Structure formats: C-alpha cells, structure tokens
Image (cartoon, rainbow over all chains, first blue to last red; front, side, top):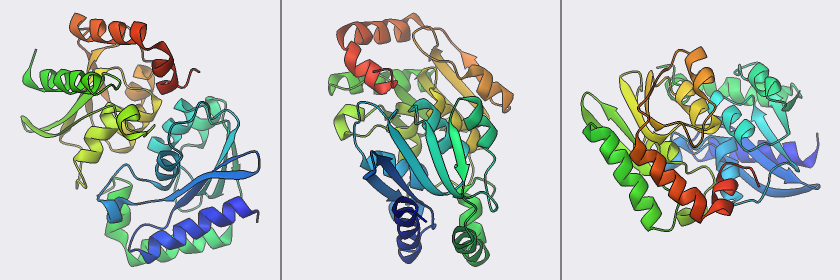
Length: 144
Length: 144
C-alpha cells in the first residue's frame, strides 16, 4: 500500500480512537500530502464532516484541484462524490467499496477515475465499527 | 416571498457584507427554521462552506431530514446537490437558477422536488457580485 492510503487509514483509526466514525482521507498533489482528514460527526457534532470533506476543508482555499488525487478509505457517499465532481478532482483512490457506496457510476459519468483497492484492512475496520456502533453508522448514512 | 426564503436572502446579504459570496440557505421543519447559513469560503477559508452546507452544519446532528425543506438563494452546485440527496432532504426551494446551476436533473432523478422561484432579487444580488468579484466567483465554482 502506498503512503497516501496508509495516511488515510491512519486518519480513520485516529477517528475511531476519538469515539468517531473510522473513515479517513488524504488530498495528494505531485506526490505530496496537501491535507488529511477524518470523519468528525461525533467529535464536532458536524454532519457534513465526512473524511473527504474534512480533508478538503483542511486544505483551505486552492486555486485548482485538477492536479490532485483524493485517497479515501471508503467509497464516497453522494455528498462527497458531488464534491469531487464540483471540485473537478480527476481521480479518487478508494480503500474499499464492500461495506458502503453507490456513487461509482455517478463519479465515472462525470469523468472521475475511480480506483477501488478492495483492501481487507479497510473492510475489517468498517465491519468492526458497524457491528459495534450500528445506530451511529446508520445516522451517518442517513438510514435511521 | 415567504419568511424562509427571506431569511435565506438575509443570510446571503450578510455574507456579502462580510466580504464573502452572497449565497444563503435555511433548513425548515414544520414551519420553523432549524438552522440558517451562508457561504463562508472567504470568511473561514473554507471551500466546503457553501450556504447550504453551512446551514446543515449549523443544524448539528439530526435524526432525519425527511421532514425538512431546504431553502437556498441559488441553484445548488453538485456538492450541495449530492448532500441533499445523501441527507434525503425531499424538497429544495431555490431563489434562482439563471446565474448558476446544473444540478436540477440530478436532484430530480434522485426523487428530490425542486422548486425554482426565479426571484429578480436573487438574480440581481448574484449579478452584482459576479461583476464585482469575478475571480472569487470562479474560484468558488472551480472554474479558475
């Protein structure tokens, strides 16, 4: 696994340690990390702070995202997928799409390249969380 | 104009006064304002803080959005439209879609009712801003 997905996984694990939802993301440009983030729904009482959104917020104002790649441990939801399309991020590298995610077709139809690594480590992390905190997970994906 | 769109316009005007982008939103439930917000890209150096996102963030954690209506002065971008779909907000009332916006079909294809009021007041507010601050506007819609 490359250092960017590893950093996204580290972010996810940090989020779980904080009592939050274990999803992490990294924005990369030219082989360097621009910003990193993790889901902060619980920590900041913020429903829009998914891992991808937190990383993009932490990147601050950027002139363009056309030269960036977004790494994320889980397949983006429609909020995050819409953001990727709007921000014109050309490529997303996803840890896994087994436990969640239906935005691949939407992303691809808008020209975003989607690479799914299908990492057992990411699947295990989500499965452990979903079993331990089903209500919190369903709140985050608006399935309550 | 009803009080909710008026509050969204007030938010937009407040944002412009702060040196920001004049787009405002209100989340309504049962005839009451749950939360309100406006674009804060400039004020908070936050590219995800569109008016709709700021209102949803200010609402904090909600059990459901199925009984809410989102009012916004401008047609949502794909970030905000994806968020509306993900959060299962059933109805969006839009001030105007003349100066921006291509998400109507996406929203409707996901079952969201979209009502466009086409208010001259909202169009004038955006046109004044876009003429005065074209670079900032293009940054916000990722067209730099």
